[in-house]
Length: 331
Image 1: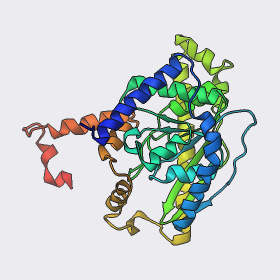
Image 2 (image 1 turned 90 degrees about the vertical axis):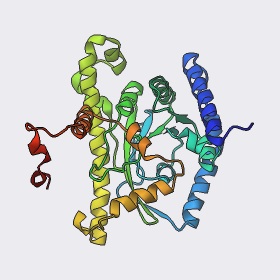
Image 3 (image 1 turned 180 degrees about the vertical axis):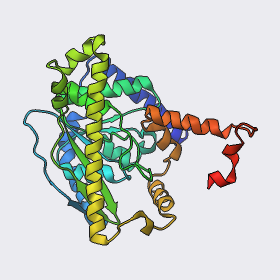
Image 4 (image 1 turned 180 degrees about the horizontal axis):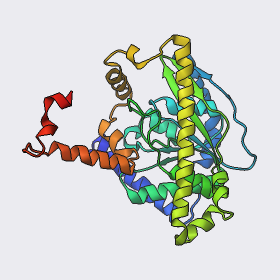
């Protein structure tokens, strides 16, 4: 009896994770590096042709090409808004890079899976602590061996109604510190068939590290007594990263508003957000909203708020808490 496609994908993913673990544990050669040298020019050409024949365009708000220090690896940290953002940002950076991705099962044996296979791609299992650890180690190895990496620090599409950038995982800045990489932040937005990309300069987490200590990140991390200091440095680096991504995004919004006269949220249709989300999910069969919630970073404050909301649903009216159920207060 033939396995269904999802079962096949999950079996293949299990094998992939085992192989990843072997590569790290035994110091085996990193996969995909040689293949990318041959496929990169071809895939870039194909992506340009797809963009052209779809009647799409890509424009840049600030720098088209960002200059970075010679000899240091680069992490391209991007906002995550829709399915084609990977391809459009890949076209914009014009440098081969290792892709960090999380949706193995929905890309398995598809055109997207083929594309991921033409470049070094590190798939992560967001529900496995062990696999996330090995994914991080593999990313650092690629960087330390001089390769560039492309990552989406929010981990999921930003479907928030009010957050310019979602909370981000520490892995991006931690990998940069461990490999002495610099980070180019990129924001992308889509208006119909027009893609706007904004990147401006680069972020160097080592400058924040050097503000606190003259030790390397590896030296600092090797001593458990430095745990609080390491966390302080990572927190500041991560805040800087998120602020940079948010600023780049807001600059696109501001520019678009000036050109097209959209000045307030009040001008948007009442069903704008729902239509927006429905349109996005229809582009990616198999995409689940529950994954979007479960796989993103949740700060301690968010977890506390979510627990509070869950607890409130279980409250039963009594004389002491009757004010909570007063309809006049709910308005």
